[in-house]
Image (cartoon, rainbow, N blue to C red; front, side, top):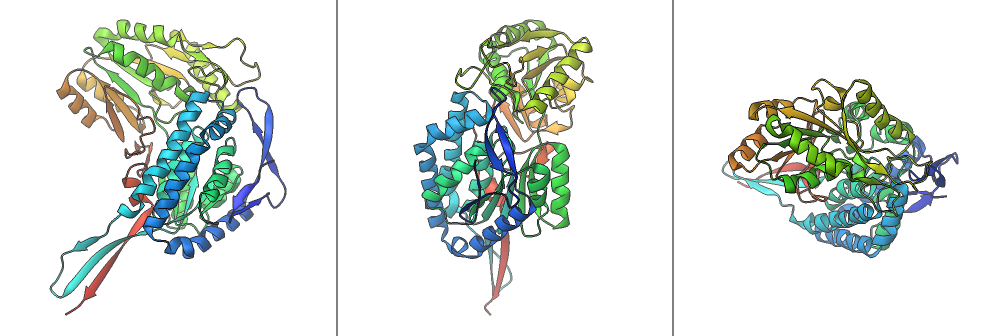
Length: 477
């Protein structure tokens, strides 16, 4: 049985409660984690505050950066072990898990190198005055991460916070805590001081809620559903705490009649089946100009029918979904669409020898999907693609913007002017042109508009989110 990591020590929950760790591949429990709660959150916040007020807070940025770079190197040195942990915990193909660990390492390399590149400013002011603007850490930052990319999400949120000199409390998803716990061992061995990274495992409604509402934190990063994101933001508001929220998407692939078909089709398919569609940035809406809708979607259907689903070791296109609730959710959307008479244009294949007790779902392509259908508006968070026709550029933009979400989008056309016009008109935090996804995209600022959330992660902008400014005004006569 695993333990949680607080103040440099490994601890069980005070009351001894645990949570079973279940493999999505076969539905079997293979380990347990502590079921922490408010008591353990209190301990973790106190440990982080002590570290941030102590040696870690006084450490020069260059030294902080060196430690983070060493952590990145240590992650790569343990890549295969971490990938195997991640694959078993999440059910994702082993190749995908290996890539996720590379991205985890890249976050610590990138932000370790950036730690001493955050400079202040000098502001012209009245005669006889010297005005300086300093950028400082916020203090103790809280990070509540989801189960779809546990290793990547740890790096995405924790690395910039540490680079700025904050101390952190991480609450991983109860379904996928194992890679974070192993990471804590690796980071400690690489030189991260006690209390700088604290990991409290437990349920979202217990440990997560206690962390979001804790008066001793100075910042919250949350990735998850709109419903929980609203609760997190309300909790943060009571303590006047800043938060960055990433709350999902319904991302469109906008395909015009002059698309490079050979390039677009495999990328479009991969964008929805990767990680079993359990990706906030999944390209879940395929918007195709009406003049080529039938022929282009037929090509996508041919590729979609070749998608294979299996265990991590099979290393197919995608694995199972995360848990029984997620399986039921995805299957419900599929069943409702079928019942509404929306045509199934293609289905992927679940391997015949995949365990029958695993949480497997057939990737499914529907089309044409009515604009008012749930598949056109709601985030399924599974390998389900909704194909929809549009008439012209204005109609494409209206359709792309016609959901509550605004996280990612892609535009496919050989017309350079149209690429720019549509990309600027679409409401999304990132827009890809004749490509999709960033392979981790550590350097690229990321975040949403509308109900996809607010604030920015990744890139140098993330350092601004996890820091604050102080203005110094010196009268020298």
